[in-house]
Length: 392
Image: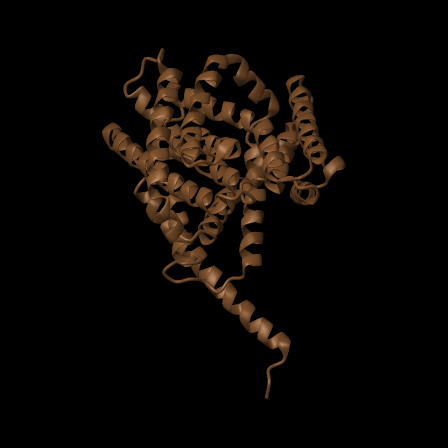
C-alpha cells in the first residue's frame, strides 16, 4: 500500500530535522571546546559545514532551496545585530577622532585588489576581494576581548576604533557593491544606491544631533512586541530590497543602523544571546554550500591573500597604537584585527552572480579559516604570557 504523500513529506522533514539537530549539537560541543582552548569557533563552524555539505565527508540530505534560505536568514539576522552594535553618532565621533587611522586602514584593500588582478577578475573582482580583505570580524574580536579580559587596555580601545571605522565605511560600500554586482539596469542601480545612501546619511545626521526614538510601553508595548517589530522590519526591508535586485542582508544592516536611542539599546540587550546562535548558523550554512574540492583548487591564491592580509592588518595595528605605552601593544591590537569573518562572507555572497563566484567563495572561506586560526593562536600565546585566568 502506497504511503500518503503527507506521510512521505513528514518522514523526510523529520529526517532533515534530525540531521540539522545533530549538526547543531555538534556545533555546541565544538564551541565549548574552542572556548576552553581560547580559539575562535568560527573556523570550526566553517569546517563542519564543509564536512557535511556538497562534496563533504558525510553530505546531509538537504535541498538547495533550504540551504539558500538558511544562509539568507542567517545573514539577515546577523547583519541586523551588527547594525545595532553602534549608534550613528558613535560612528561619526570615531571618524572625527581617527581620520588618519581611517585612511591608513584602507591599505587593507590592497591584498584583495592584488590577488583579484592576478587572477584576472577585473574591476568587479578587485572591488569584491578588496572588501573581503579589508574588513575585520567584529564578532570574533568581541569574543577575543572578553576571553582575554583586555577591555581596559588602550590598545584594545584603538583596535575597537578600527572596527567602528570599518563598520561605518561598509554602510555605503555594501549598497554600492550590491548594485554593481547584481546586474540590474543602470537606472535601477542608481536608485538603489541613492536610496541606501540617503537612508544611511539620514540616520547618521539624525543620531549625531541627539535624535532618538524613545522606548515606552505606551508606544511599543512590551519588549516582545518591540523584538517582533524589529525582526519584522528587517525581514520586510530585506524582502523589498531583494525584489529590486538589492542585497537583503545589506538592507537588514541598514535597518540596524537606523534604529537608535532606547529602541536600539533594548533590542541589543534582548537579542545579544541570539547573536552567537545566528553567527554559528550563518557560518555553518556558508560552509555547507561550498565544495571542499573548490578550496583545494584555489589554495595558493587563498594563502597569498592570507599572507598579504595579515601583513596589512599588522601595519594598521602598528599605526593605531604607535603612541601607546603598553607592552605587546602591536601584537594585542593586531590579534583583534587579523580575523576576517561575517562581513567578508557577506561580501563574497554579493558576488554570487559573477563568473568567478565559485572561486571567490572558496578563496573567502579559506581566507577566513586561515586568519581566524592564526589570530586565535596568537591570542592563546598572549593569554598564556599574561597568565590571564580563563573567564568561565
